[in-house]
Image (cartoon, rainbow, N blue to C red; front, side):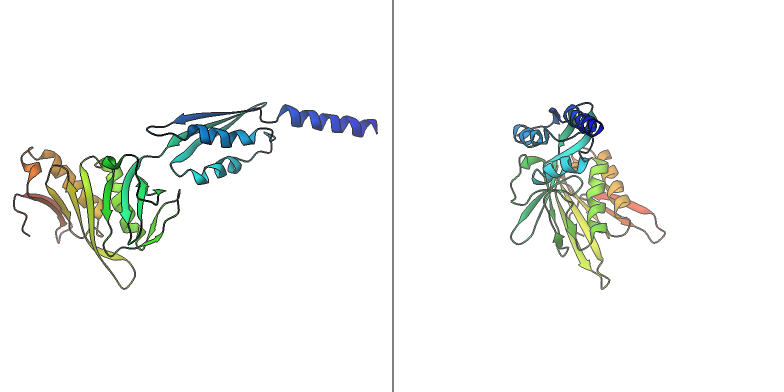
Length: 247
């Protein structure tokens, strides 16, 4: 009985010693902040045993905060839980007949009501025949051709061209296989149109070539005409500027 009592006392001491006493949340945010609200949610973890606390319990709190993501969770024994949090950046918008979705630069859905904190920073993407098949807050949007859609999104991020482009128009037609083919037009703030022929075929390389061409244009040339990027029969990708809009 003495041994059992001693064992219970040891377990109770360990539970008390390793109970979460403080949740230290470090926020990296801009603009409006829900830091106080999130901190209040995290404080509900106080009293839980550090040893058995799963990271998934911490991540689950953020299911209702799509603008925020956890970058790290650290257990600082004996009783401090450290959580690093960053705010996702608005980058794109896409629309259906009844909804407009705000996305970050990786395609995650931040808002489904069309409201953006910084609308001037958002590139509007017109999907054309491409359809949205799933749009869950906090998760990446799903389309009827994710390979094509995300190749455009990923290239915009890689080239860091969001501040140059105000809209992207996808003029796509579905194959019988369910994939899509067609062109993409990037409408720049300076005025020149950037047209990518067959964006489904090596589109990332074509977009890169087109914007490389854009960078070497004179200030005047950036305000007029069109840059066309296409692939020749030999596989070479060409980007050329014309001062005439007509095809």
